[in-house]
Amino acid sequence: MKSIPCNPNASEEVRSVLNYFHEIQGTGIITGQHTQTMAQEELNYIYQVTGKWPALCGFELLGYSPNINYEDSGEECLLEVAENQDTLQKAWKWTQKSGGLLTFTWHWFSPLNGRDKSFYSEHTDFNVSKAITEGTKEYEALLSDMDHMANILREFCNKRIPILWRPFHEAEGTWFWWGSKGPEIAKQLYRIMYERYTHYHNLNNLIWVWNSPLVEGYVGDDVVDIISRDMYPPAHQHTDLRKEYEELVGVTRTPKLAAIGEIGPIPSIRSLSTSRIPWLWFMTWSQDFGRTEKFTTKEELRSAYHCDYAITLDKLPKLY
Image 1 (cartoon, rainbow, N blue to C red):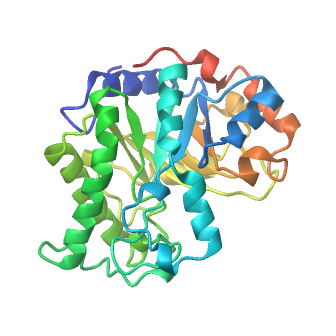
Image 2 (image 1 turned 180 degrees about the vertical axis):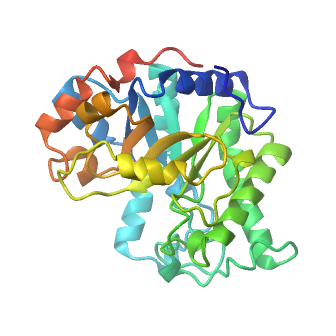
């Protein structure tokens, strides 16, 4: 079955990836890991434990936000930004050396009036309700930041590298500024970005991933390739997440591919191999989630990565 991207001008590489995703639905799950530092300790940990690499690697763009308030930020924030510097070099290396799947998470520092970790609502006075209205200073700041990030993504587009693009993640919550005024505003922000990146910047290498399980504020099938949600079950709880899957696929009118955008303890790959709940991928979050046994034991990780149902990097075909 051929997949039709939401962007009619999507690149052949995007179409190749989406077609592959349709082929593997219910026959396997793509293993993924988020990283946010140059050291990428999480990837090395997985390889040391399992002898395998994940097929999908997530990278963090927070340090590339153009409006970080260095003068009014705490040590923890400054360290996080410093450790994230130049991680795009690792993203290049990942795609060129491994041919693996690539996704970005952008903890977007507030376009205006931010302090410390201003991607959190509590650290900014940015009025996101005004940011969806043309002519306001908030709208101009929003577009300026979007354009800044588009220029960073441009090189990946020029080199025809497909990106699983998951903007305004966890849009159902109020903890990030983009969700602070409710999911309806977050929906409009996403649509503004989609129009800007697709029709103005022509970033035709993006695969558009919506990230929220709520029916309220769902952005619309016309601008989404894949639906996803983030989940953090209790430590060492590993299931096939059937209930969560059924909730997520209920948000769309037409069937969509579904993925686990972020997770703490990994899902049970053994259970999935039996139930065949068609999660497309999972991406374990970074730091203690991905480099210690606090949430997933080495035994569970090893068992998952060696299950026939798990799609690791060595099983991934050349897609771009």
